[in-house]
Image (cartoon, one colour):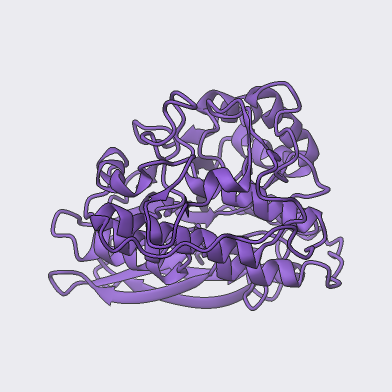
Length: 440
C-alpha cells in the first residue's frame, strides 16, 4: 500500500524541510543527457511515468513543488522526434490523499472534482493535452489505486483523446504497447490487500463500492499532515488473538495489527469515536470514525469484530479472482505484507516471469514510490527485466523523486537489444539511475 507505513512515515517526518526551488529552464532537452534520443531517426521509444498524485487542492496535494519540473519534462517529451509513446501508469490524479474532515467533492460530484483538479494543475494538463493534440506521440493511461474510481468519462473530459487501457472491472488495467507484446505495464496495486479493488466489503452500507481500506487509511494520514503531526487524541484499544476462533479470527487479528501500527504511526488529535471521515464517494454517503475501521473485541481473547470491512479477511480469494490476479496468494500473506514495497516488486516475478502462462519479459510497475530495476530469469531461464517507475511527489525521503522509465525496443538486426533505462529529473537535470537490456 505504497509501502504505506515506511514511505509515508518518512514523508511526513520530513514534509516541513526546505526544498529547492525549480529552475526556469526552457531548453527542449538538458545537454548532459538526452534520454529521449535513440541515436537514429526511428520514432520507437516508450516513456513511462507514474504516481504523479495530482491533487484538486494544492494546499494539501502531494505534488506541488515538482509541478514546474513535470511540465518541463512533458515539453521535452513532446519535442523528442524519437518518442513514440508516453504511458502514465496510474495515480495520475489523487482522489485518496484528502484530509478526512474534508468533503472531497465539495457537495458536488466526481466530474466536478476532476475538473477542479485539472484547473489546479493546469500547466501539467495543458502539456499532456498538447502532446495528445499534436498526434505524434500516443499518450496512454492505466489506472492506479489513488484514481481507482475515477471513471473513463471523467479522465476523457480533461484529457480528450487519451488512450485508456482498463480491465473489465473499474480501477485496474495492464498495457502492452502495440507491436511489443512481451512488455507489460500496470500500476501494481491489484496484488495489495489494502489497495486492490474490493467489490465485496461494505455492500450493505455503500452498494456498488469498490474502495479498499487503504482509501480510509490515506484519508486519516492526510489529516495527520494537515493537523501538523499532532500528539494522539485517543488510545487504540488492544486486541488479543482469539485462539478458538479459527482462521477467520486469526486473519482479522492480523488485520487489526496493521491498523494498530497505522493509527499509532499517524496519530490525529480527534477521539476515535468521532465521525470525522467525510465520504460521499463511490457509494459511501455517511461520516465514519476510526473506531468504525479498526477491529475490536469486548473481552481479552474474545470475538474480534469490525464495522467497516466486516468479513474482508474472508473474501481475499474472491477479490483476487475478480481482479484478474493470475497467481493467488494467501490472505495471511497478503495482510502481513501490505506495507512492503518489495512485496509489490515480487509480484512481477510471481505473476509474470515465473508464471508459465505468461510470456512477458519486461514488466513495469509503479505504486511503491521506490524506483528500482532488477534482472532475473523466467521459468524457462530467459532473461527478464523488472523496473519500478518511482514517483513525482514532492518528498520521497531516502529515495529520488521525479522518476521516469524509457524503453527503446530492439530492431530487426540479431545483435539489437531492447534497452530499459531508469532516470530521475531532480533539480531539472536528467540523471540515469540504472539500465539493462535483453533480446526476446
